[in-house]
Image (cartoon, rainbow, N blue to C red; front, side, top):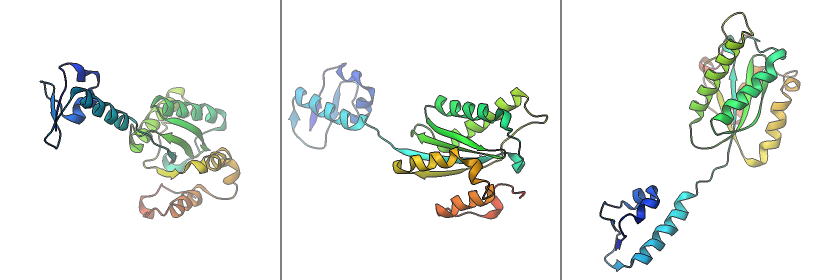
Length: 204
């Protein structure tokens, strides 16, 4: 089937041109042998545009990462400011920050993830920008940095409130278990294969 489209009309949507492989003369080929009218051609284009343009996602990810050396460096005096700054980084990347909280040696960030960037790129930017923020503030005598690696765990919409409250009440949870017990517990719960050799550095 050959569709004839007047020159210039298809420039209203560049992605339609790419999808239908329109050539400079305004002609595109369909897998059949009949000639259809311009009106019918536009109808086909528009229906496909509506179908293709709707990208929907519902991804909820909890990210966990630790201070280098697992040292208790995140002080209560500036913890909230750091959490707000990390939330700002996430929002600046056009992602949804649901909650950021943690302990002196690690951070939990619960994120509504849009598939416009990878998790690894987002974590990299969070770590780089937040470590620079801490060092520029001179909250510590030495240089602050995050430990390599992170955990990322996905949840359904029905778990949002439960995960939010879990992260909100980190201090209470860690009265009962260490960070190592918590982190390994996540790996086992989500059935993630892991090697102790490549986990965070543990000192407790």
